Amino acid sequence: MDFGQIIVNGLVLGALYACLAVGFSLVWGVLNVINMLHGSFIVLGGYLAFFAWQSFGVHPLIMLPIVALLLFGIGYLVQFLFINKVVTAPVLTTLTLTFGLDMILYNIMTVYFSATPRRVTLDLGGISFLGVDMPIDRLLGMALALILTGVLFYVMRASRIGRAIVAVRMDRAAAALMGIRVNHVYAITFGIGALMAGAAGVIFAMVFPVTTNLTGMYLGKAFVVCVIGGLGSVPGALVGGLALGLIESISGHFFGPQHSLTIGFLLMLILLVVKPTGLVGKKGYE
Image (cartoon, rainbow, N blue to C red; front, top):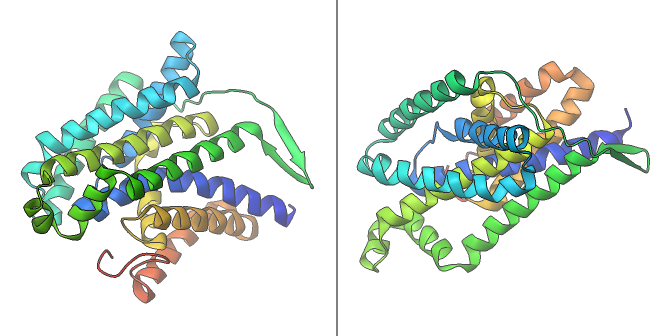
C-alpha cells in the first residue's frame, strides 16, 4: 500500500476518534467523572440513525442534529437526577454509578435492538487523487467530525456557557461565589458530552457497522485518546484522536491490523509514565 494512502486512512480515522472522545474528555476534565456510559451513548446514536433511515427513510444528515439534541437531553437528565447527587464523592463512586447506568442502557439496547451490526449504507462512491483512493462516505464522516469538534471548541472559547464550564473546572467554589449555578453547569457539561457521543454514533453508523458489542471498544478508544492528547480540552482530544488514528493505520500496515489496537494501548501506557498530562494537556488535569 502507498504511504500516502496509509497517512490519509489514519487522518480520516483520527478525525472520527477525536469526535468520539471529545465529549468523554470534557466530562472527565470538568466533572472528574469517568463516564462509563459514553460507549453506549455512541451506539445509541448510531442505532437511532440506522432505524430512522431503515424504517422511515430519514437521511442520517437530517437525523444528526435530532439525535444530538435528544442525547443532550438524556445526558442532562442523567447528570441532574443521578450523578449530581454524588458528584463530589470519590471518583470510584461516580464510576460505579455510571457503570451501573451503562449496564441498564446496554441491556435495553441489546434486548430491543439486538447486537446485530448495523450500518447506514449511503453508497456515495469514491474518489482517487494522487494515487490515494477514499470512499466519499468516509470523507463526509471526517468532515462532519472535524466540524462538530470545531463548533465545540468555539462554544468553549466564545460563549458564556463555555466560559462558565471553564470557570467551574478551574475552581468550583469560586465559580459558585461568582453566581454560577454549578449543578446546572455540570448537567449542561454532561449533556454536551452525551450530545457529542450521539453525533459521533451517527457518523460512525455512516462509515462502519455499529453494534452493542462495540460499546467497550468505543470507551477504550476514548480513554486512549484522552491520555495521548490530554484531558479536558478540545485541542487535546483532536491531537490525541489524530495521533491514535495515524498510529493504528501505520502499525496496522507494518504489523497487521490485529496488532494496531495493542500498539495504541502500549503508547498510552508509555505516555502515562513519561508524560501524564498528554501531548498538549495541562498539569493538574492528568
